Image (cartoon, rainbow, N blue to C red; front, side, top):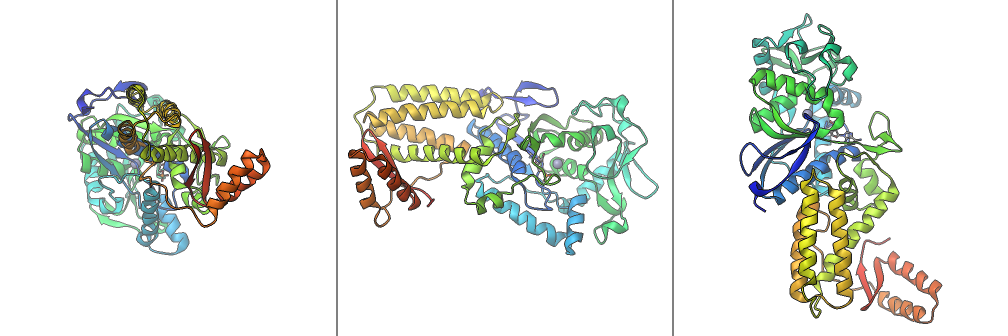
Length: 475
Ligand code: AMP
Ligand code: ZN
């Protein structure tokens, strides 16, 4: 579909409504997503955010937009300094380790790379000049210790994103740490004067010796790469306050222009009903799950398959179900490769039309991926039935493969499926033996043989065309 002809709608946190999406520049989307704070390995809650953003970008591209995507790396803040001091290594060395780990992890999860990954420590001049503008315009002031603060009462729209009521704000009171609650809303630090606790982490700048606050980092880097007004800004809902509220205050006060047109926030990944977080210790890193033998693509599928604005409880059982779903799709793609049936008399074309529309409508409606996947699996089931009946001609199967390949550009879970390879030694005899056991009605023996084959990495299935097998990772 042509980008301008699309009918995309997104829920904008700013207005709390679904709005038709039209980018500033036709056919082009500029989007900023808050990246990782590289003080530890990211947990899969963080990856829920990054995978939602990946799905959003891929869907925009599917609809024909060219997307410029910026994801920052927060390599200087309260948490990174604390972490490097604990390990007694220089900040840059400490954050480099976790930055590389992050890049490895997103590659493992098949996340499409962003256009730019700016590091905060490489953009100190952009931050200080933005703070200088705020000082010049009277939105910022210096405190006695040499830090610079943002005066929230000067910005009349303060609170518009998080719906924090201005009268609830205590003016004159200040907060220096990066994270705080709505109830603690007050003047926040743009530039933090050097203290002994910061050790050797500081920059000598016109604002004095010190380091930036977290919120100014994202204002400075997003506007540097995407301009003073851009289309989409994402993050998890925990970022709405104070981080994104403060970004708006900083950017709009400095430029006098609207900062972001669509704010999209993902809900949290939960464990036993609680937000997955480092603080509470109820988290899995990607690496934890890979060590236990889980398929990273099943993790990708699981984290993406619930609508991004719904909370989602993570369980290992759900991960197993996600693995089965991915296997079903891969198996389907494989089956299509050897289809050479009589033809469906137009049924395939009809099913394709219907699924294209249903999948597209659901995704255009604020990325409703669960409805879209439901339509896809209905389609897979119906085509499988036609395949079982030998009713899918080669040309029709090619059409279905092309469609599935296009959708996989969005989902990123099937990849290249290989045609069946040769069976491991001894497997053929076991498959034969299992067939004989089934014929004799010896189901217990047939089941035992199926399990032995599974342990060898062979999955057997009984279809109308006889026994089929495929190779999977060894159990
Ligand atoms: P951080 O590295 O803490 O700055 O977080 C990176 C991203 O992960 C941000 O967009 C957070 O809002 C998001 N995030 C953190 N915890 C969760 C969670 N449990 N579920 C979903 N997103 C989360
Ligand atoms: Zn940010």
